[in-house]
Image 1: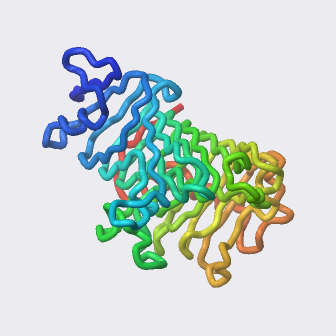
Image 2: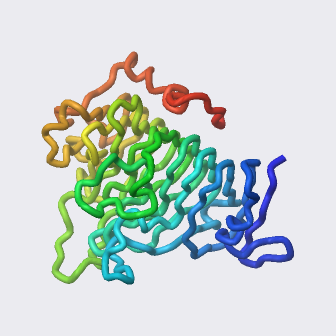
Length: 338
């Protein structure tokens, strides 16, 4: 039986008041441990590096982990924090599970605060079940980082000089919210029965005189490593929004071998008729792999789709099973949800 630690806002004997203190008390071995987090709002920022840990709440709506670091925040030396030092929770470990929890970055729109991660997920065999991921720009980063940054200091943060390790992530029955590039990175990630919510820019929060943009967002910005079989697969998901009609793209390529597939998904009217954006990388038209299969809803009309995207046949789509994606790097006894 797993060892269980308890965290509570009103801790009694034997319990911890913060998640950070419970992580510090983890035994220095690889025996499975569950940290049970009782309902409450936990305003803290933490990094987990030990494998075989489960963070488990009782209800994602009442068990909230939140913080507010953002990319434009100034550090003590006068430099900006940058994207990869912003996450509320950084999970830098294999064989991790999160269940019934909310991870939030409360900074606000990237037009004012820049990128602001709620979750930095860096590991293999990671499961997020019935979780809520809340933010605006860059809500969820599915590591690894690309091999190199476009500009000096672009990857400043805890993993800037680390080995780029491939990983597999499984998101089941999750709610993921943001506006620009809010699901991004290089992991082979399977999103199963998730709700993907694109947020409209709030004009009241923008600088006086700033106009709302015609395009309100991009859901994905994959950086799938060259040669990796799978990138992002969204199956049986619902893409919803409060954005204007035709103002959100399904994805744009952070790197030129980006792979993203939406299949059997409901696409609402916020999805742009072209579906996909090339981010000005015309040379990547022959290397990116942007695809759809059997989607439905007002945003699923394929007549105006970008020429560099494709619609899969039934036979082609059969290669994107959950087993194919999550076993692509070796054995994994991942959970099966009915």
